[in-house]
Image (cartoon, rainbow, N blue to C red; front, side, top):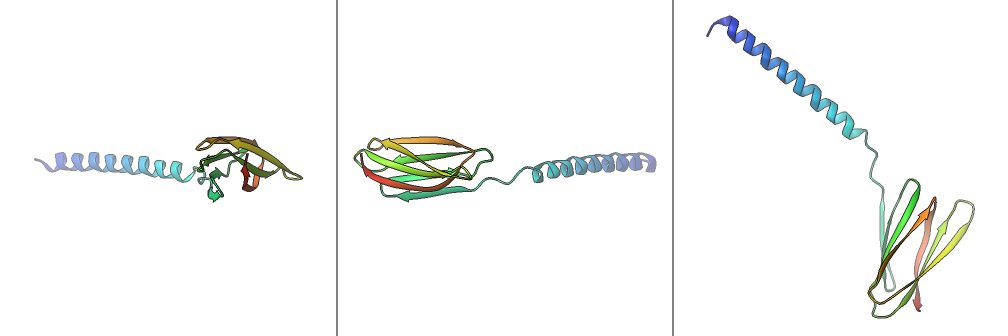
Length: 114
């Protein structure tokens, strides 16, 4: 193999490596530009296991009744200037969810037998 052929092969390899590096660098910028994942809050209150995540425009609370009887679940949420209450009656072993638009969760508690 001549020196000219080897040099052409090295230039081709160098171009491929440079192109690959640029593509990988571009992917890295795209990955780091994504927003951080929202915090997920989980807990247990009385018979209920619950969770909710911090959202941009809404919050959805998920719950599961772990007891063998119908129960009430109270969710207190804030709309910035005021707080409101939401009550769910959940059958034994039942699950559910509720979406709150532009709200933040203040508290979640078991309200006892329904």
